[in-house]
Image (tube, rainbow, N blue to C red; front, side, top):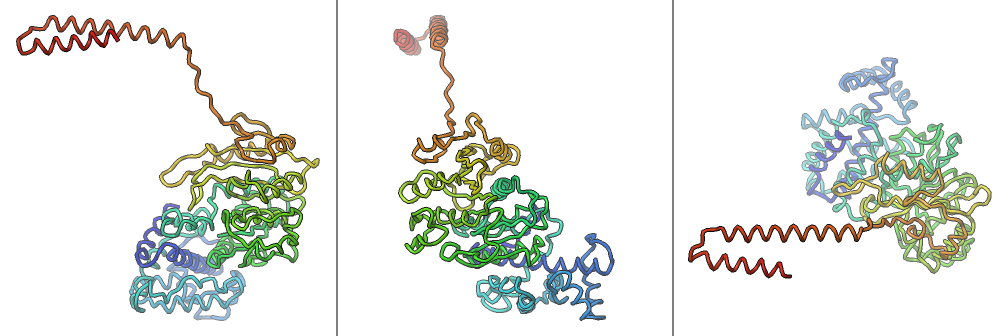
Length: 533
């Protein structure tokens, strides 16, 4: 992780000043992804040649082997590697080959552009994937030579990253780091496309409970961002290779990022169904499967949407008789996700606290959800854990098929459980995350932390789900013993009187001159007056 961050920082230094963070982020992530594909091909060549599992030899040996093999039988090597990986990069276009040219200052930006074009023709999964890496942009340099120099330096720096030795989500970790370091430059909403790993873990683990053995397991994220929230599901199911990912994203750049993320995690093409589109404007997916084992979501908070009356006839919103306000699409996203949840599944969504207590249409929708027994848990998170916003958020857990038609709700107040760091609060695995999971599973009252509220109790609160109504975190101040305090004050006054008397006695013993007589007398009078008070 430290190595990845160091190299990203060094690469960003090359681009910083030429463009803002929202742009150079795209270059860095695109090139990291291309490097991954290139290095994976070298790894595949090694395994084919040696007949054994890749053991991290030097890439010089791998590239030499690929070039020799390619010269001997170009068609054969292309066919074997394409069958194994689903793509083939010409040896001269491999990231390592481009880096060798960069070291010798022979790199031409047209080689990288042609590499992107060639890869984009090799299957639907690569189409348009590198559109945001604009190598002709004058922001890289005013002419081709200057652009060559800029990309040359970036390639040389990124080539030092060992992507296969990185333990974690490469694109997700890189994206999180870039947002964390450059959020101000990337814009205050940069973080809405990425859910911090700690929050992803909470949601993923909860929605997987009692579904660990389901295979195939279908997860859906209608506002998928970089896709990391869906990918976390694999940590908590027993058949991670049989998870199918269904996601939609409005922002094209972020949609491409999610596609990269899926490929980086070796998700087969037939196990990912991703769409670039507006989740609220037009329902998707409508073909099978359109109901899922888990729905996970971190939508943009209080976004504006059309709220067109036509949606009152839409199956997603019709049962609630009201639409989310035009200025706050929070419940529109929630109802869309809930509609696509199957009867045995679980949904987790991150939203601002306003959804818990705002009235009018939102109040009516909330009441209907509670009457259905749809809202299963309300989890309050700490402030300042998301990039781009410091507001505290809440995770709502929803279910369609409640056991025994239950309508109670477990409230968990984890808002004060975090570690404060310089720019961001973080949730720690044992101290903060695990207690949330334990309280969710236990589903019982925990002093100052959790409360299981009956439906009648919620009705008595007029369907208001504001967490402080149910979880009392007030800490009483330690009671003061008036008698003991009075005794302490009396003893203290006696000590002060004794000290003053001793001081005055010392003044009397001083050798008095005409110069000091008046000063000593004035000092005595002050102490006498203070003592009388």
